[in-house]
Length: 204
Image: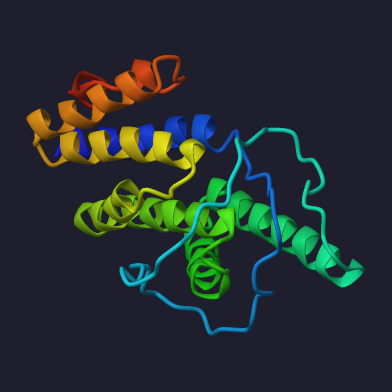
């Protein structure tokens, strides 16, 4: 069980790196968020068919780069970015119940064309990770992996996380496939030093 325990300790370190980025919106605004009751179910709907809408992310909290058609749309874009950033901060502060409910709500209300839609799915998988529900986390990550429309900035994190989960589940050969793909697709990735099951085993 030490492997799983160590894996959870790594979450904080991994989050420090992966959360150093926040989405930059790059095209027309999606649907405005609607009120929805908090939900404890994080699994995404596989019937969703997103279309690409994304750009690389940055640690600097800049205003949205979207050119909105109206003032009201501009306000909506800014509000969504700000609210999503607040949910990420809650997650970083380990206020998982509040953060995860928000990510679920964003997944249910954001337009699938919105880059934050993909980011919400990734964080939903992280919500499962902190609960040790690795199978559920993997299912959400595999949806991002197989989409073909997932932003590079999120796909890169998806690969390293799928590798980590397979390491924790003692499927090291499968983990190595994801780690190799990470290196092949993103040879300059900051996550490459973490792409090894031995990293998960540190402390055993």
